[in-house]
Length: 313
Image (cartoon, rainbow, N blue to C red):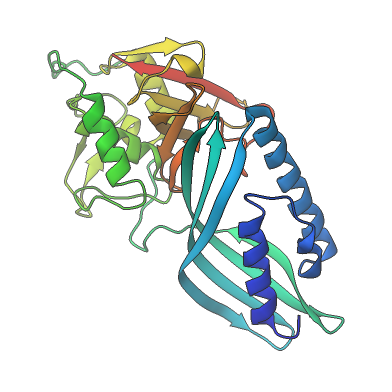
């Protein structure tokens, strides 16, 4: 490529095209090491599609923000915020999947060509995002100084509507976090009618207060994936563990331990089912809509991944 903008444009074009067809055109704009990484990632993705018997149909990439962070003679670094969309067919039914991507791409001028040598996922949340507080020892008894709330009815439709409305936005009535997945799922359940279980101890209950102010407080179970998973098993939210994903209903929750080491790192909500009755989920952090539940397309995925499937009662 004669200019770095041409090389970057071709790379993004190939990236989008690779969602629906196998392509070897990446070699024209990637360094050797990067090409090997992309080839491995694409191979894994196509293996998953083959197993699901999915037929990709259309794809597009919408650039929402583009910033040049480094403009050197032989090295360029750009930051891109975009929306990735693709459609596929499964058993004669049309499905769509969307994902927000926030990446930093590095290009170098090598042997009279501009090549992409690196792509990193970057935090795409607004600057005022905060870190959820992490409590090393969550497994403690509830503080029963304040009684638990009474019975409630979980409105699955309302929870799903909330998840669809806010999957790529941040409700201004809550703080948002660098790692926002569990905060988002807690909001969905709250929108579905599950009441707070307020306590005076952040290590107990399930609650949020203070709106979007700097003084806002929340229980660990509200915003930390590991604590949230524990609360679904032992807390006031009435949830039943299911042995497999296909037994979940809309509005149910999946928890993920990507490394299989007992530390739960991610949470999603079921918002739809594919043609085979398998869950499609919405999530934050990497904002995703109608993503296939197993997350094998995630960079965090490992073969040791563990799941917990929770049917909200």
